[in-house]
Image 1 (cartoon, helix red, strand yellow):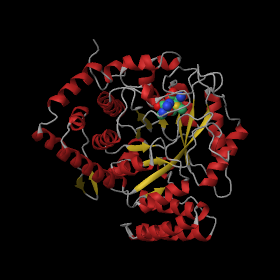
Image 2 (image 1 turned 90 degrees about the vertical axis):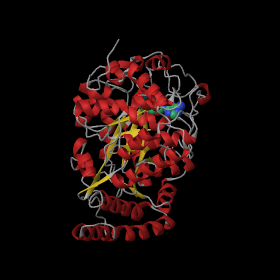
Image 3 (image 1 turned 60 degrees about the horizontal axis):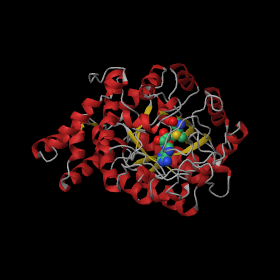
Image 4 (image 1 turned 180 degrees about the horizontal axis):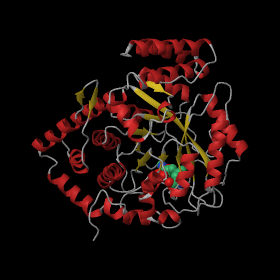
Length: 482
Ligand code: SAM
């Protein structure tokens, strides 16, 4: 039987089934052990250090105890600490992005995804480079600066060369004052050589959802196609890192398997990346299975309610305090609103999950990957965020300044957020307001920027940010950054 070893490169050793089962038994046995729980909560709290804060994070065992605990007062404490961590490391900024679906050709048989090979009643579509350009113009006209590209797995229709061409096209489009400054990539597990090519093409984060860490279920849920290979899929992030990509994004598709199992697996995966590469995941996504063309989410036994979902999110926040957390438009406004307080740092807005969806007047459903619950426009999402005290940020500075991997983490830990990320958020929000926002959103936004500028601690930084904001308002100069 495989032995648990977080530093191993073998899937069955770093995501070790026996270790997960023992963790779940330990968590169950201690779920009301208040002295232990208090100790764990204390360990999770951010501690002031110099100008910044540090956080120890939690092991998968510790975090699993918190997740298992059903005492309402403990849940409240978890939520409070999650919010403290969020504010300490990410401030009140929320980074905005949009998905861009390139192709729904797919040779896999994933049981939860409408793009599976056997689905013969959805049209198959792959964007030409001209169509990519048109989609990017539509996204730029909404105000987006950061995309996550999405594609099915199909070596004939969507080979790596196609993905690379699309990335090149996306970066080459500059419509009016528009720019896509960071392209994150969510495509199937691939080879070190292909990851190297993606790195050379200038991608931001490589995102790959594990879907489920439970091997037996994984094999059943992915009965056919290259994605059936659990080990190849689970070891993908190590190959990505070997190919030079140091920002990787993990995720579980909640609803497929028992959430406590998935949670322990996810945190173990983060621990593994830290143990082997010295840097944890850049982001963690928390998607839930949604209704889609021939997919009925109730067909999966492990759906979770909104309260459990919120608790999972908060426990992830405590376990991996420096990792960004992403929530998509799979979730409703109400759920997103709650999760933003519990540690989420990135949201998508104005999303269309169909191939070629942004250039169509009406939201198309025929090639949609899943039903979008939050159907508000980007302008509405931006205004809503600000009305709830969050600063929508279109910043992409870190990666363009080479602050990736552990360099990004050290910025976080050194408390430089208010002198760096915060002004960057205000400057990119100004760009959005000047170039794309409705009059109501502009009004709310400019008021917020005025107030938020006062919070920048360093006089010099504050003065430069204020000057740049004036330049954006009064000229076509854009893309200022610290
Ligand atoms: N094809 C690539 C792969 O296999 O990893 C990635 C792209 S896929 C377009 C992005 C993600 O959408 C998948 O990893 C899966 O977690 C999620 N997804 C698929 N079907 C879904 C559904 N019915 N509801 C919610 N999310 C879904």
